[in-house]
Image 1 (cartoon, rainbow, N blue to C red):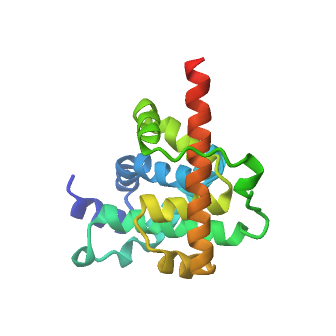
Image 2 (image 1 turned 30 degrees about the vertical axis):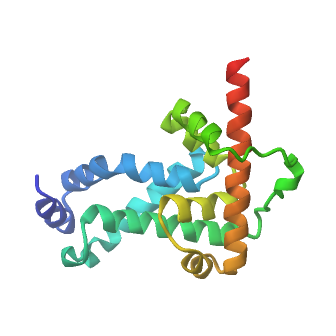
Image 3 (image 1 turned 45 degrees about the vertical axis):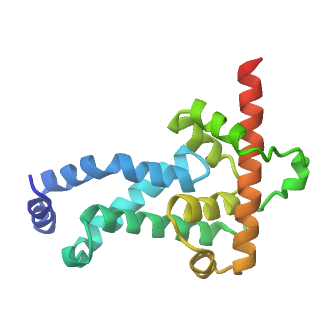
Length: 185
């Protein structure tokens, strides 16, 4: 079934088309939710909420402005950012200083660690970051947003965005180095 047929069927309320849309895109969207959420339960809730939004707003999709997958991805990323915004005051950030200052700076070490990790292990490590760090890291590194855009969307300053990213990267490096040391023992 083509994407156009899929969209038309969904807009007509055909359950089989809704199921097909979900089957095609749920895996990728779950990965996005998992990157932003603190755990699998939150990710599953975000996935469900995201597809409800997709089904409700599918009539606003405009193929001339981009691909269906890109539009769906944008809906999910925005949902995850909104989730962060709603919960940012109950979530606290942990200063990297609490973990010490022995953060490796050699890029070769980091590349070696990443080479040995599976995708799921990397996502797991990202999900362990404090919420603010994790959100800025995802938005900048994975979704390719600039600090000005991140600051605007999260209602923080550009300086805070840069600091959160710096601390996220350093904490992630430290955690990945520790994980590698445990594996080699």
